[in-house]
Amino acid sequence: METKEEKKPEEKKGFFKKLKESVDDREEQMMLLSTFVRLGILIWSGGILTLAYVKLPPAFNIPEQKLDPTFIASVFTGVLATFGIQTARKNGDGTFRANNSGSVSVSDMERLIAVASQTAPAQTIRIEQAPLTFTTRDDKGEPPVKPTL
Image (cartoon, rainbow, N blue to C red; front, side, top):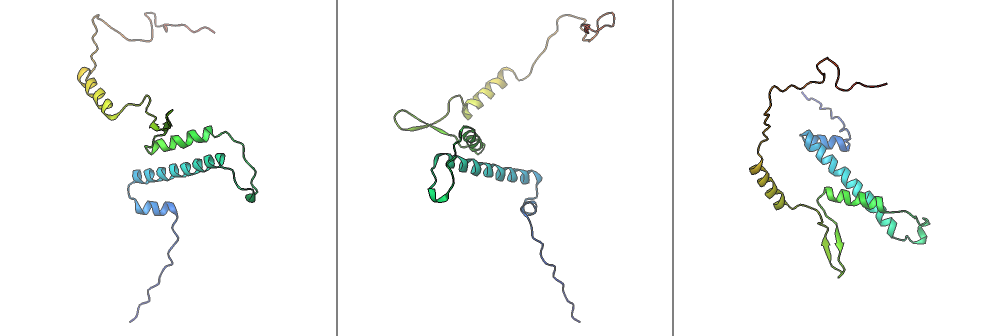
């Protein structure tokens, strides 16, 4: 006896379906998706910044765009920062240095946490006058502040 095996045509899988099958954990799926979104924004803002500073050849017949690249540059550096990349500033002597003004290093943060945990691991509230009541009404049952119309 021969049995015929019917082959179902494979359905085409989209990006999200492939992502769902390759990564089981929902949190990992969202993390991977957010990385792709950030990469897309990085490529888009990098392209716009490039077009703001590069003059295209006249053969393309694209008119020169006059735009202020400040917003796009801030989006670009913000997305770079989410990947842990810092911008550099040019010194007067032509060298570059990282833009670390106002940032706290890891060792500084660890030292601050250690000092804070030794000095104030818990908060103590001491009340020296009794009896103490917390209420929103006074002795007559009225609110402390009477609203005026």
